[in-house]
Every structure is written in C-alpha cells, then in structure tokens.
Length: 203
Image 1: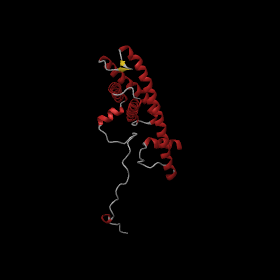
Image 2: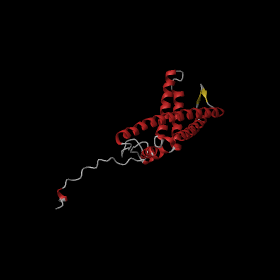
Image 3: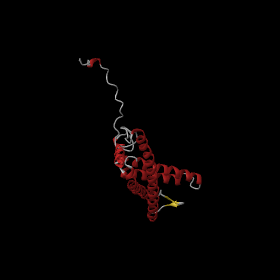
Image 4: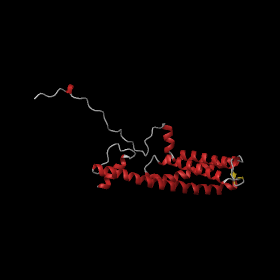
C-alpha cells in the first residue's frame, strides 16, 4: 500500500499550549534592576522606611495636624503605601515564606525609618507632638515604630496568605473535578510546585 505523500498532508496546527509558567507568585515583565530590589527585603524595606519617615515629617509640619480628617487620610495613605510595598516583596515568594519575610521586612523598614529620623533630628525637622524631637526622644520613637510596623506587616501577610491559600485551593479543586485530579499545564497564577504538592497529597 502506497504511503501518503507528506507534501499533501495538512500543515500542523498552531501550538496552542501556553508558555511555561515560571516559579513566581506574579508573572510580570520588569526591568532586572527593579526585580532585584523587589526581591530583596533589605533594599526595598529601607527605601520604604525612608519614604514613610519623610512622608510623616511633611504631613505633621506642612498640613493641618489638628484636623482629624487630615490625619486620618494621611494615616490611610501611609498604611496603603507600607502594605503595598510589603506585598510587592512578598508576592514574589511562596506563601509559606511570607511570615518570616514579613518580619524581616518590618525590621529593615524600621531601620530605614529611624535612620531617616536621626537625620531629621540633626536638622531639627523631626516633629514630635507639637515640638521638635531631640536625641533623647529617638529611642522611644524607635520602639513604637518597630512594634506597629511589625504588627501591621505581619498581620497583613498572614491574612493575605490565608486568602491566597483559599483561592488557590479552589482553583486546584476545579481542574480536579473536571480533569480527574490533574491540573492542566500552564494553569494561570498557579505555580508548578503547587501542582506537585497537589499530586503528593493525592498519593
């Protein structure tokens, strides 16, 4: 029997497979320098601390510190910035690493913030209540900053991690119901290691 002419066979269809998903929480195209800083809890946290302290100084010296609305809005903006920067770092690592990375982020954020505070004290630009802070005020300020930054970032990381795990669990159960327990290749927003963990739980 004659073999069919390969030149008459239809051309192969386009490859409909998705490109391989790289092991990261987010799949973004970013400059290498930005990615390096975002993955470093030291550099990103120090930058966050500097911006937070400068923002505090501007808010308390150039605004209306007696207005509750003004102070409340400033607090919300500062909190969003702090937690947003923490998310920028945490989102690049597995959820299981978030607690200790959140604590490390809070430590270096405090370092950056209080180093900036020392500079502002030297320049007599660090507000402390209705007056300017002195060097003897720095230690109690540092303790308060570290406590509240640690509580805020760590609590946020734990809550966000819980939400991510719940959503991810639902996304893993859906292909299990539809495809007999196998997660398809190229599943968006799910790391390949999550599929391996899923398979190990099935065994």
